[in-house]
Every structure is written in C-alpha cells, then in structure tokens.
Length: 384
Image 1 (cartoon, rainbow, N blue to C red):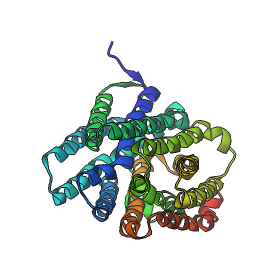
Image 2: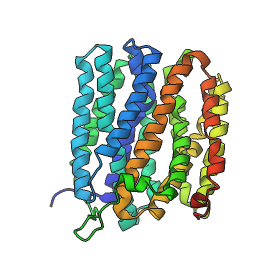
Image 3: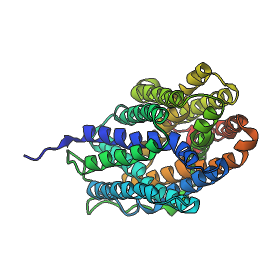
Image 4: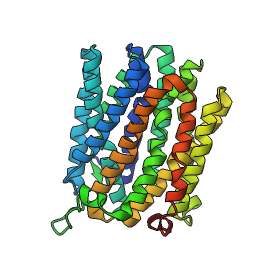
C-alpha cells in the first residue's frame, strides 16, 4: 500500500515548511540585499515592488481553482518554480537584474499562502480540523527558522540566507508530492462557480473587513521591512534579532493554540479591536525601546497584532464566505491586506526610514487608529 500522511498532519507540515521559508525571507531578506551592497532606499523600493508582485501573484495564479487536486497541483508547480527562481540570484550581480528577480520570486512564492489556507479551510469545513492547533505549526516553523538563520548569519555571513531559502523550498516541494489521506475533494460538477474577485470586491459588506485587515496587517510594514535593519543599526546582534522574531511568533503560537478557548464567545468586531489596541501598544514601544528586554517583551504582542487579527479574519471567511468563493476571498486577503497594504507602507517606510529612524514605528501605531471606528460598522459589529 502506498504511503500517505493523514491530511491534518500533512497540513501541519505544509504550514511548518512554508512558514519556515517565510521565517527566513521576511526578517532576513533585507539583510541579504544589504549584504550585497544595496542601499536602504533601494531596498525599500525592492521590498515594496516585491509586495505588489505578491499581490498580483496571489490574484492571478490562484484563479479557476476549486478542487483539492487542482490546488495541490498548483502548489507543487509553484514550489518547484520558486526554488529555481531563487537559485537565479547566484547568477546575477547587477542591481536592476536583482530588482527584477526579487519581483519574479515574490510573484511566484506569494500564492502558496493563499492556496495552503484554502486547503486548510477545506479541512476545517469537511474534516472538522482545529485550524488554530494545526496552523500553529506554521508559527513554530517560522520561529525555529528565524532563530536558526539569525545564528547562522552571525556565524557565517549574509550569503547563508539565500541558501537556506532554497533548501527550505526543496523540502516543501518534497512534501507537496507526498500523498495525504482523506483530503476533501470538493469542486464537483454540481458545485456553484466562484463569484469572481471583482464581484466580491463590489460587495459593500466586504469593504469594512478589507479596510480593517489592511490597516492591521499593513502596520507591520516597518517591522517586516526595517525591523532587522534598525536593530542592527542600534548595535543589536543578528542572534538577538533572530530571537526577537522567534519570541514574536511564540506569542502568536499561544493565541493560535488557545484561540477557541479565549475567543469562542468573543465577537469578530471585538477581536479586531483587541488587535488594534495591541498594535498601538506594540509599535509605540518599538519606537522608543533600544534595550533587548523591552523589545523582547513587546514582541510577545505579535500574538495580538497578527495572531488575533488573523484568527478573526479566518472566522470571518469561514462563517461569512461560501465555499465556492473561498479561493477568491483567500486570494484577495493574501493580495491586499497581506501584500498591497504592506507594500504601500513599506515603500513609504523606505523613503522615510533614513530620516525618522525609530519614529517610523510611531507612524505605524497611528495607522491602526481608524480600526476602532471601522469595527463599529454594521457589517462587522453585528458578527458574533
């Protein structure tokens, strides 16, 4: 009999390996670019355009997919293509060629999040999978890879970052070709067609959700893009920088593991308000903290600023979105709040970081203030 992993274990491994790669790319890619001699202004532009590419990739490379088989096939092809594309950085040195390849790799890599979350949503819907308990393995993978990469960069040099990304994608590809048992098929001939991305975007009830998630996730832009650079500039070692990211994800793991217990009777609107309050506190603290301990403590709030906001978003999409619209909605979520919103604020951060330095985090705190008002919208406030 052919070996196959139970579907929930396969999904846990997928989250662990995908976010393991993300745990290298997100905190350390700016350091790789800096190590290659690229200026912070150019890095900001590269990261911003990369996020636009992520947005486009999430929208364009996830279309017309309903069945689990089609989702898995797309995941396999994109993972292999991403591994080959990242290998291309070894062949080029020109800054503009690097710029173009940064855009291409992000265009290819980005849909893997939306596609994975869609498969996870199917397992929740049909196999009664506990999303938080399985998704936390992604956070564990992120935490371990970011801590290990920080140590390796300090022991060796920035070049280990690119090698680690390629190796991680290779491991992820091996998982994608490993069979899984009891995967829900879905997408039968009688299934309704998806409403389409534009149709979903035209729904007035969807816009408050989109605005809230864009502000909450977009406010992470300075942290994602320049957190490691800023901490390095004030004399904090790469090992501690890796620890900062790991501690942040530890807070996220806590809320994912116990999300049902803490928020089972809390409305979606209140979860967004809690995330916004945590964001104001976290970004304000990072704007003033220069010592390791207060930074480390503030990083625990990642469980609130990202974890609680993401749990609320997944509740919204599982409770308020039909199955046939799941892929399109996940694509919008990955493309706009997780990519375009962060891209815009990353671009702005790149322009102003050389001038304002730590104050960039204060501006991120101000960016989330409208969430307190938008959460009172009838389309959000009435969701239990």
